[in-house]
Structures are given as structure tokens and as C-alpha cells.
Length: 277
View 1 (cartoon, helix red, strand yellow):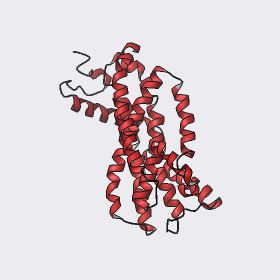
View 2 (tube, rainbow, N blue to C red):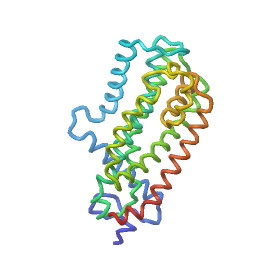
View 3 (spheres, helix red, strand yellow):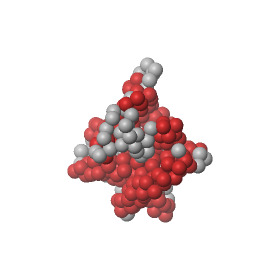
View 4 (cartoon, one colour):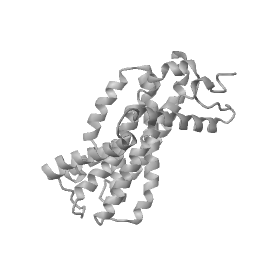
């Protein structure tokens, strides 16, 4: 049996001929994604329910702290709980993004021994980290739409853009995960830098505060933050909030740069990965 063209049965992974590259990748991704969910919630009392509890707990904590105690308000958003909708629009993007990045950055390093013994497309592992975040993503967007309707905000025709924004979020996240997972495998300091960058990035993204509270001369700088572009786009499409001019174009550029650039970087560095293994 050729180890490069067929996955060995001893590993428990389905054997798939290399001739069907796309089908092989799909089968492997599904296998590893199921394994990821089983491992993530193994031994917990609530199991898969944690996927619902964690985003709801984060929403409750930030809403109580900023919406009730600090009484943050969102200018231009007509709703009795406008800040709750604003906060949820941001968390619907931020929580799955950090979940994918946090797990994906170390995905290659964690399975270094497996990759050395059993050749397989290395990009499957970062893709599994992104796939594992899709449940949180779906919960976040679902809550946003349901609560928006409950608060009398929408539905609007602009909601038809949401599938495109979700696709942009997945592509952007996957591209960045590819870059960071490869970089962390080669330079182990990257993981620590990513942890700090995520903490800083949260407060550089208009999630717990509305952009309207930031002096207008600084608004353009938010377009240099790809996650901020996504958050602003969702706030505009779902809640009809005003956003800086050029937000859609900036988001499109980030999707191309991080999505396409991340794939190119990962593929170009695979020979280095092979030598390291």
C-alpha cells in the first residue's frame, strides 16, 4: 500500500484513493471534524450544549457590564435593547473567529508526529479548526436575526447579503488560520504573539462600543482591521447602522489578501514543512 496515495486503515481514517483529490480531502475533513467535536466535548456533562452556553454566557457578561452597568448606548439604532443587538452583531463574528484561530494556530504542531508517520494534506488540520467554529457561528447569527426581529429591527432586504458575508468570514478566517498554523509550526513564538494580538484586537474592533463613540477622524483606521470590517458590514446589513465609506471594498480586499494570500503562503511553505517533518 502506498502511504502517499492512500490513508492507512490502521489509523482509523477511511482509505480514499488519491485520484479523487477533492473527494479525499472532503472525506478526511469530515472525519477529522467529527473527531474534533468528540475530543472537544469528551467527558463534559453538558457535551455539545457547551456550544450554546459559551456564546450566551459571553453575551450576558458583556451586556451586563457595558449595557447595564456602564449604560453604553448606540446612536441611530432604534430599539429598546439596541446595545444588545450591536453587541451580538460583533460577538457573532468575534467568537467563531477567535475559536478557529485559537485552535488552528497550533493544529500542525499538535499533530506533528501524526503527519510524520502518516502523510496527508496538511491543510486539512487548519480547515478542521475553522469547521469546528461553524456551529458557534451559526448560533451567533441565528440569535442576531431572531432578536433583531423581536426588537422590531428588520427583516430587511439587505439581509440577503448575509450568506455572502458569512462566506467572506469563513474564507478570511481560513486564510489567516493557514498562515498562523504554518508560522507557528516553524517559529513556536507565534502562538504567544497570537494570544496577545487577539486580546488587543478585541478592543480595536467596535464590539463592546459603537463606532459612533469614536472620533470620526479615526474611523478610517478601522478599515485596516479585517475583523472590524466584517463587524461593520454585518452591523450595516442587519441593523442598518452607518459605517465608514469604503467598508465593503476594504472587506473585499481583506478577503482576497488573507484568503488567497493565506492559501498561497501555506502551499509555498509545504516543502519546508515536509523537510521539518
